[in-house]
Length: 265
Image 1: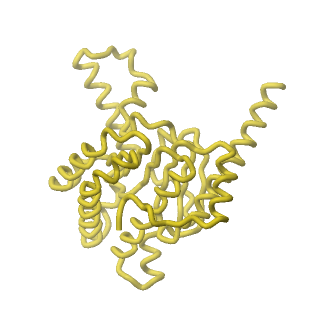
Image 2: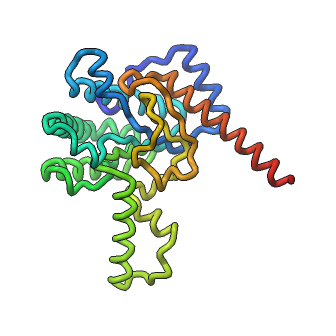
Image 3: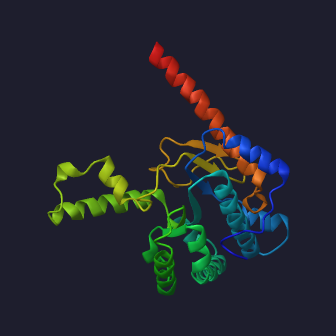
């Protein structure tokens, strides 16, 4: 188990289709709502935490596939603030799993550096136990100089909380005399979002068949293509990602034709 997968062997067919897709426009920022871990556990008659653990395996594989396709930024919805309302045992198990994965990430500092992978944990981290906050701080520091690929892990996150936080910070900047009230604009708020430094979301993908955004990336994905797939996240495979990117390219092409037609008219 590792954050950086190198053992996945692409078949000739997978290489062929990925090469074909790379001839078109590739989304630079992919956002993923990793949904279906609990249903996967129920279907396979295992504990819920095993479903979440298998979800991490899918994430690690997906990161390698994204690098193969040329997607440079990925933001994943790992844990919503609303998830704290779940069964206490499940929440504690998820937090413990997260501890273990962050500790593993820190131990793989050199491997992450070799591949240029930066990992940022974003969200209202003050809601997390102090030891996890410290681990996150360390994890952010050990990858901060890596610049080939960025993974944003949204943990203890909702988009409304993120936007509220940005607004509060802008008000504090006015109170400190750093800016005037007139300086509060879209660009300023964009810079105050947790994903500051990342490009806008091009493609937002949700697994498990649910067709809602669940308060995720509402600011960053305002102009994105949204793709819903029936597959549960732990069952997510490379060809599911290829289909999502193809859907993105097809809709970008149709959108481009529509814009061109409007300009002519």
